[in-house]
Length: 469
Image 1: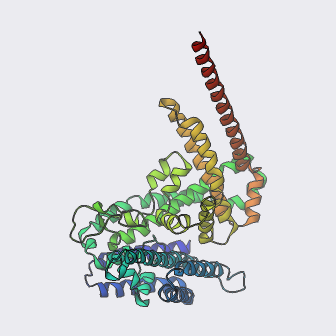
Image 2 (image 1 turned 180 degrees about the vertical axis):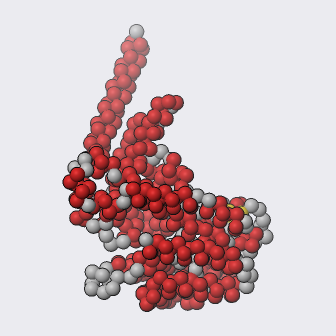
Image 3 (image 1 turned 90 degrees about the vertical axis):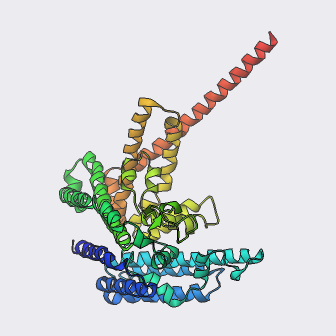
């Protein structure tokens, strides 16, 4: 609870500071002040553990600037994720474990520095292509590429430790950070209105989190009373409130983190630029263009669609969207094997979340559930209409949240002994159910395919008989 209070106080302070920060017009001053406040946030929660962040910044910055730009992204990826694993393993090695909020800072810093290395690599590749076709201006294909190819240690330092997103994200590209410093959009967008709009639902999520966690605490799911006195159905049902608590906590934290961005004007772009979460503008930025503004570049979660969409696959798209962009762009699309790219992406996601087995049980379980959902969607939902489709959608929605909740309790219990104890107490119901569902679904699909072939042969025979007559 103490960590939650510190977390809320820091986020609230950063949101309030944005009212002053976004009004700073001088880019140099804006960079210095943003970084100074960011370092203060890091110091306040990390103490001497902030040396980890400085070491990671220094090593990654040297790799980005001085290593070959053909491989700097791979070198930075290997170093940062390797160090992240070491950072999480300090307690196992007999050293003091860093505070929880320090872990969150390290997680975001990992995405930033590795993402920046990939941005530089992409800019280098595009510049080589432009040079090969006789392009001028050093081969740079855009203003953003020119900026990336001229980065120095100070630029990377300011990007790494600017207070916006330093604690909990969302992940933003260097381009989005650079635009927030140098372009005037933060002074034109309705930053206060966007922030208030996001804050409206935060009290509800926070109250629901406190209320449900008081009535159905996660700790109870590890108690002797829970396993000895509660029925099988109660133990199985308990995954629903635990995952609900988790969602409310995540919704509260992510929306407050987005508010830090919106109040500071970071991620503000004209709607015409068609910004996407994590990526930023998908169209060329021109300073003179006006219009209504949005903060899609820093929108990290779509709560409404997460809750109301029918399928597991859809819900994944609306959850932690900026991080999903990072995973899709720098792992999924870059992974050499198309066959294993989904598993590799989810594996990296699990490593990024932590070293506990629970993260792997949960996140890496998704690829095994998705084919089941896809199979039944194809068998029953694809051609359903009217009342039948509505009923099937509701069944799919229940299945979606059961899957999230059943796998999610592993994410919360963390260790193998607790996870195995819980799953054994419900006779591994979820996994057994999904195996049976997949087997039945495959059988139905084969029967339908065989029936379709018989019908086709019957039509062909009828056609031949008609011709013979």
